[in-house]
Length: 339
Figure 1: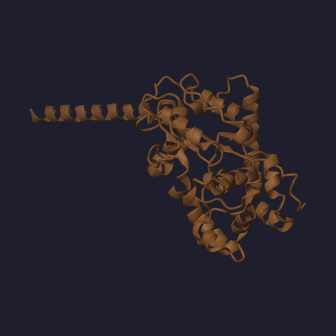
Figure 2: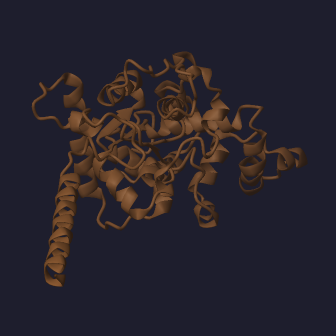
Figure 3: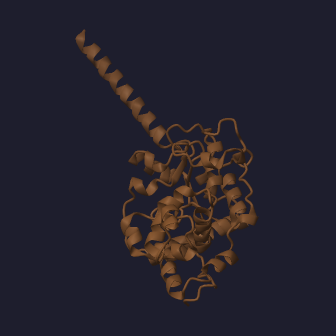
C-alpha cells in the first residue's frame, strides 16, 4: 500500500515542478513593455517608450531623423575621444531621475530646463498629487531631495534592468551659454546669498588682489573674469568636485557609458520635449512649460561676457569644457579669440 502512495507523491511533486518551470519561462519571456520594473503600474498591453522609439514599422519623421543623427554623432564622438571604459558606480547615477510608471530615465543638467523637467516628472509620477500643471509647482519644491527617485537608490540588478528597458534621455546646451547662465543666476542675483558665501568668498580671496573686507565677508560681487580664473585654477578641482551648475555634462550624465536614446537640446527645447512626451504616450496628460525667451542667456550675451577674457584664459576654459563641445556637436564660438 505504501508503494503506490509514494509513487503518487513523486508524480504530484514532479507535476508541481513542471508547472513552476513553465510559469518561470512564461514570465521571463514577457516583452519589455510588460516587465518594465518593480512597482510599475502601466498597463501591460501598452508598449514602452523604448519600444515606441525603436519600432521599425514606423514611418520615419523629420524629428526621428534628427534624433537618430544625434545618437550617431554622440556614439562616434565617444569612440573618437574616449579611450578607457570603466564600470558605472552608484555615484555616477545621482543625476538620473527614474519614472517607473512610464519607463523613463532622465539625466538632469542644471541650467538646461531641469526645473521644468522635474516639475513634469513630479506630475507624471504622482508626486504632485492631483496637480497636472507643472508650472503650479514652486521651483524650489522641484529641487527638494527625495521628491523624485534617482537611479543611484536602486540595487545593481534593478539599475541594470532599468538601463536596459527604460527610455534614457538628457537635455544639453551650448557649453559657454550654459556657463554664463550659471554665473548670472548664482553670482549676480542678490537672493543667492548661500552661493555667495559658499563660492563667492573663496573666489574673491583667491583671485582678487587686495580685496575689501566686505567682499571677503559677503562674496556677492564676483566678476565673470574672476569666476573663469576660479574654474581653470587646478586647485579648484583638487579641493572638491565642481558644483553641478558648472560641472560638465559628460561628468554629470556619462554619455559614453550610458546609451542615451534621446539627446534633447536647449536650442530646440520645446520640440524635443514634446517628442519625449509623445514617446512616453503622455502628451495628452501633461505639457512641457513654455519658457520665457526674454531672460535666456544667448550666444550674443555670452560673447559680451567673454569680451574681457584674455585669449589665454579663453583657451584654458575651452579645454576644460572641450568634451561637451565635441560630444554634443557644438562648434567653437566665433567670439573666442584664441583661434
